[in-house]
Image (cartoon, rainbow, N blue to C red; front, side, top):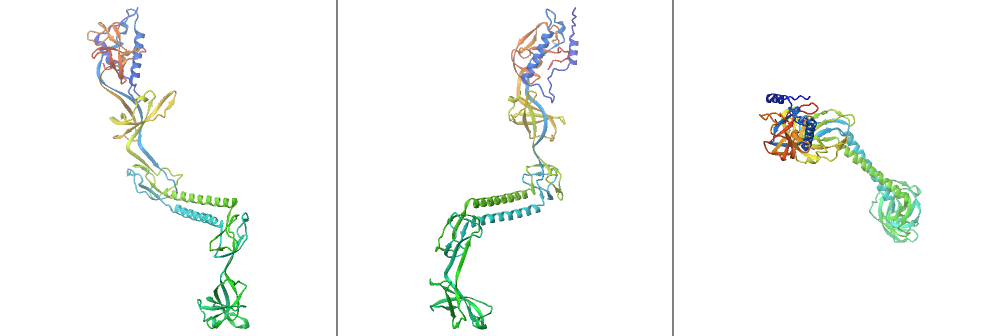
Length: 541
């Protein structure tokens, strides 16, 4: 036979004081959120009621398992909670890219530094020498390229008349191959011996009379030079050579000879005329003759193009030199860029947290660790994982309340900066990282562990009941007459109840908004004992 125990109002109140409040967890592990918490509590409460509800008229066995609570208006805050570690908004570990001795390090730990400010200057003598060598390599490569490019056009070494062209289009030539003969016979010179004593009286620039042998024609000339050395002439007399220049009237050649008289001083012998230019022009590069620009008898000036060279071989050689030049330029650029690495500046604005290297130390770009560490502490940053179920509730700019066990009693306010859609899936459950910024972070330090509540919604003065009072099917249990003790503090007959449908609004996990179906001040029953033996006291009782 079932035994029913009836508790007095005093015993009920005493039992209520011993039972814990049925609050959903708000620890750092995360709160139950919004309607999910409400529905879960309702299902749990409903399941307990239907499992324990007696059949027939039995119901006394449930006395003490429910406690009355009142529907009343409250301020509810809907939030999404999580945990994380705060870090600087930006940080930089300064590492060397080169090896050398530190000459300057004009900063200390705790200093505020600005982006671009000098932090370290290293000895750059080796780098400067490398730049000088690279510049020489560029000059040499440029010269080689320019010389070949120039030598692919064969040019006359002086003004004159082309006597003979020695190549034709399609010929292959190499350095030293004769290309053309060029001579200048418009001006002739003749070297004549004068008695040494007479020669010493002759000066360059004096006028002379040149007598052509055979015709005895006289031409005006000019003394070009007088030798200072005595020679033994015909008959053993001492003579000195005098060079005289004359304009060719057109018929004279190197085959003609002449004598001369300077003033009243006559020469002591004769000499043959010499052309002012007689040149065999040769190729300076290898290639195929692609063009011949002159013919025999063509008048040319000094530097006039005679023949062009080209072909696959010449083009290949020129391209190879062009590549060598470009490589030399790149090497120079690398050397110049490397020189910049000997001057190390702050990559960000911030506060120096560590200084590990000072002036006089040697650094190695491979073995040395961070020279210094800089934190940008204008903000602190928190990366918090958001459940896929809550993702659509989180927006940029939402307020975030942050607390830390290391600083009890203080709440710091931040804001949602961004939410990434690059989620991480673990065991079929996906989370998304949200970045939270804290500008006024007080005594929080980078590395501290914190809890964060992203404020999704604030509901002011809304009618609500404990979340555990909501049962399956969005109903609440309403006590009828005779259900409660005379003072209304305990359930004495749980069979005298009704399940009333209600319309639910939001909730904060502990309380659920009732949009309709209840009035302020009405009593609802809240499960005080769960079927498996765990106990809970009415929330807000």
